[in-house]
Image (cartoon, rainbow, N blue to C red; front, side, top):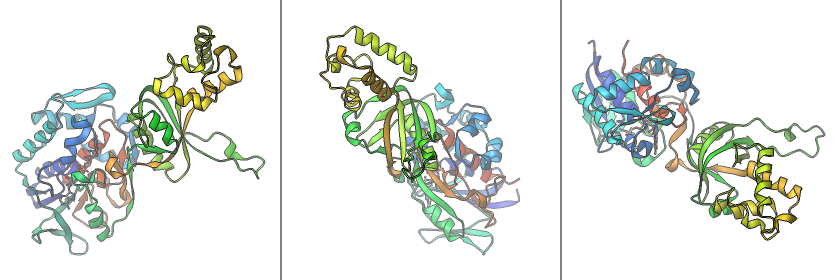
Length: 426
Ligand SMILES: Cc1cc2nc3c(=O)[nH]c(=O)nc-3n(C[C@H](O)[C@H](O)[C@H](O)COP(=O)(O)OP(=O)(O)OC[C@H]3O[C@@H](n4cnc5c(N)ncnc54)[C@H](O)[C@@H]3O)c2cc1C
């Protein structure tokens, strides 16, 4: 061992893994965490069950990275999902794989993942300093020489690994202090936005009517709402724009708009590509049926209830809290007798079911966001080592970097992989 001391700032997923990996080549590794315990955010992941990684192929891993996947190649191939799973199991936490390759501890307790990391850190002799916020990184202009704690204490070292996280769920400790430290050292931080986050829509009163309703097996499409320009004869905006996102799964109505797994995935693409533009969310409530098949199904229902009021024949087709909303949208009077409903009215009903449009007005804030999009520009970080290209001896890992993924264990895997690489020396 030729290296003497490495200081890791931030005891989240990336920082814990970085400290473990650094312990293989540094005489002394000090892990600084401002909270009273390690892994406060890991604790709340996966609704307390911690979806620790995804048991997928490398191709699938990179397909789920929303921002800067190529930057992650070396980090991922150096410490991938299989290595992570072996590591966690070796340190006393058996794992299981669920639907979609999502990996969880068998116990279903995220605390067991933190315990496994803690066991590894203790075995490796890492010095863990809790309740120790770090204030600054000291350099000689081009190279790291140490850190200064908020208490004023200075610790000299040869390497600093900064892993202070992003801005989401600030109550867990990720409050953006690392961004400030890096800005001060000359790094560029791309704009940080909440992602994997519920979306707000303009149809608030409809959403409130359906608040709490979960829709399973629906498909959604997000696309830019281009208003036709009356002055242009061949206006390209009249053509359907390419979807920003298309997906299938489960979503939920809330008092402000929409949430649930499908919406969180959609949000990452919305935030990345179009958060400053008008965007429509189109929900297909019956994706298994074509327009014609749905028409046949509705005609069958209508045939059995010819003399009933319209309001009474949708129960087999739609959830009850959605029926008044659809009735309003399709503009068929609720008390109209089924035998009086015209083909045009039926067509409009089918359109409203297969293309239930909501206008996105924005996303919820960092307090409700699973991750932060944006962060330290990856152009300023060496992807083979995670070392800053501006300051020698400064390494950056985890959510602090401008890279993020969809749900499924991919974001934690980014933290494990970049953390592990940041601690390596060769
Ligand atoms: C509700 C929720 C659920 C999630 N579920 C999943 C999931 O199931 N699977 C998945 O893959 N991802 C999930 N994520 C995302 C995942 O948790 C993060 O991507 C990951 O934890 C990022 O790790 P990190 O180490 O970079 O940052 P963090 O985990 O945020 O760790 C940063 C640490 O640095 C410390 N720190 C900050 N400033 C200082 C300072 N100045 N001095 C000392 N310490 C400091 C903080 O206290 C914190 O402990 C979830 C996120 C949330 C919010």
